[in-house]
Image 1 (spheres, one colour):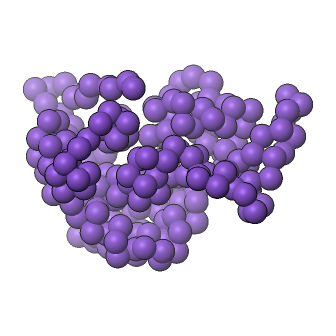
Image 2 (cartoon, one colour):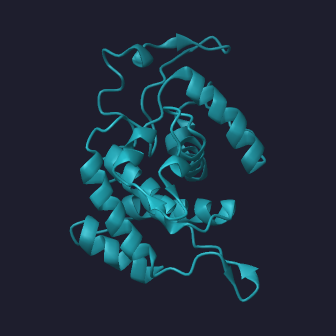
Image 3 (cartoon, helix red, strand yellow):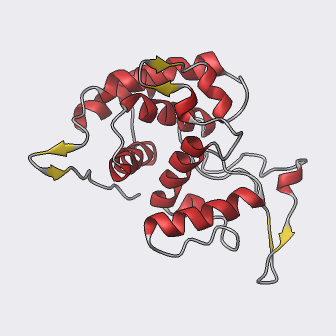
Length: 206
């Protein structure tokens, strides 16, 4: 793990990797492991996307809090309070319907209650949920109808057009270059089975 973190610190984080930037990477490796995935290129692209969407993990939520956008308008919840479903988390999750769908999916997958409708800030407060959302949304096509396997599968690896999973072609080439750097660093990790048991990676808390 340390060799991976050291490489990305130099190639993508300008020589400094404090915990608030390290935690997302470790949690995404754990989610990759939990799902039993083997294609590190998919992990590299998820990391590249979240790296871009959060300004290198400096923004836990949308800077403007959805100001001037339909999804930023506060809505009355079943608990009688108003909540706004602006961009939160490592993929900047937006819209009530996405918060609701991922509440159900996360609750089932993680084996515990995850209510993002009544507590949308849980996206940024719970690292395990945050990582789950990034993987689930990008692998199922929840965000735009396009999913990881449309662009990264077997011999196919199109990091540029994979941007369509999230947001058309905005900054697609730049994100593709970041994905290549993550892919290179991930080659140093032996993910998956080791000595007959599943590897688990340390969890950092800030």
